[in-house]
Length: 140
Image (cartoon, rainbow, N blue to C red; front, side):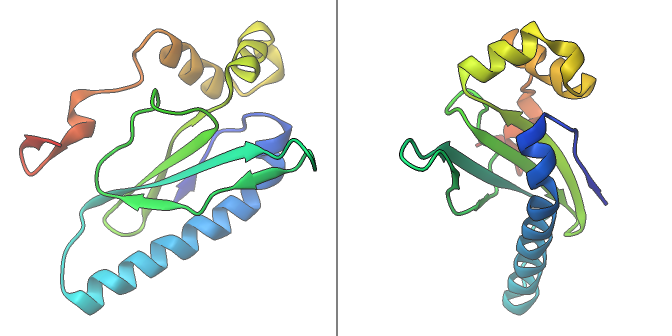
């Protein structure tokens, strides 16, 4: 199952490519786990991007697969998905640059209501839960 909110024209246009890319990463991670014989109950796929000032195109950095959840406050221009049981992909967040964030919040009717709510929670420091950072009973 792959679920994501609509967050504007860029994400809407890019989502089919993201979906295929994320599904490929999920399959590769599953194959590695099966080959090496270890179980990974939950992990995160973190994608950061930036706008190239010379070409005006978005540039996506290689996806980062990690067991710990990155904080949405450590960087801008990023997307995060969580993967549980090797096949359940869940959209966690999309954090834009501050200018874009301010525009979305000033024009909430132009954007997906769930994404606007997530950004409001982000601004009110309510997007993170302590259980997001617990691995094997310990805070990572």
